[in-house]
Image: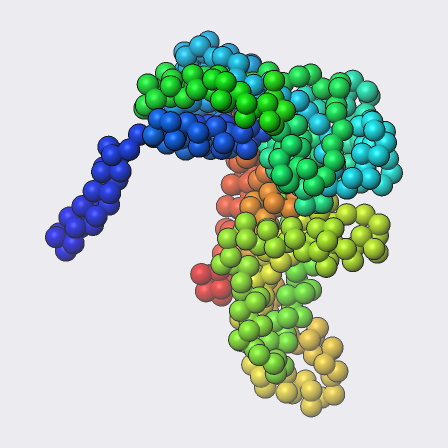
Length: 247
Length: 227
């Protein structure tokens, strides 16, 4: 019995310990809008430095709440400036820096919906029954889309059409599968392979989205996280960001 | 704002649970009746299908429902044709999801209750000339009240606590699909701990009180069923 327990402990501990020491790895909490460029940038980063980047993708608000509760991320890529700034004031992260500027679009799998050429008339059309908007409370892209809706006095009028996915990735998924007729998405989603199968309209009333990143002060692998932070601003990374509509 | 972000989800959960319980008592009684008193082809397959939602991860169930109730799914397309509106992200949609999700919790206690009724009672009633319908309402139902109580409370509580499935097919529409469990999840993620505390406390207390009630009313029977 005792030997069995010991064996069990060894079996569990050995791979866990050896896995820790052998290869370099950082964990990143990344806003869902940046998922596709993030994958390409980390692939490049891994090839050049041998450092693995393991991402967690969800809304910035959720990542923020996780970091406040002590989540073991090394770096945080937010979809806004406010949350990293707040974490910085609380001493939880190093000085934030802007890594991308994104844009909200209205995306639909049905290319006819973009025929109007104008997002306001598109969302008001009778044949649009459901529109996805990422939960504005935790998703900056959803908050920006809500600002746009309010600025044209449509937030109340469209109340019955709005569906609230958990993050901007789920908003695109709902729109892509046709579960909703259109969705407020990130420009970056519209420019992916899947995004090109549908159509999108610019949402000019939505404020541009300034996205900040920051290394956590408690990062387990602070040096590699800082290296990745620098890599985010290189010309190679910029090329990938531009491909997906970021400025 | 603060009250509606707490009261509305709680009210919605309550409404969803009441509607689901009502529908499932009828559907569950029908299915349990067929399974206990009639010869059902491929019985083991049918029984497994009914029990499946109990063991499936709610996300798997949610994913299937998302596809079936979507605009290209059989159910979603038929609903769209009939009513002209979408089934996903509506109250009706989460009622259907809850019915599937809680089906075993209605069928199992009712099946157990029906099976315990003395067959001679039913045979006597038939000999005395009662129609099958009359036998069901005048003999079977009065003799399985404990089963009905257990089924309704289990379905009610199970639906109150439903999360993963609704997260996938609900879309968190306030007053329509943002039930308490989803609202708690979102409140925690947005660091609104006060809201999360209040709603969690209400759900925990409700479940606790109902379980005491079910234990009091049905005694050993329900314990055996709820297991």
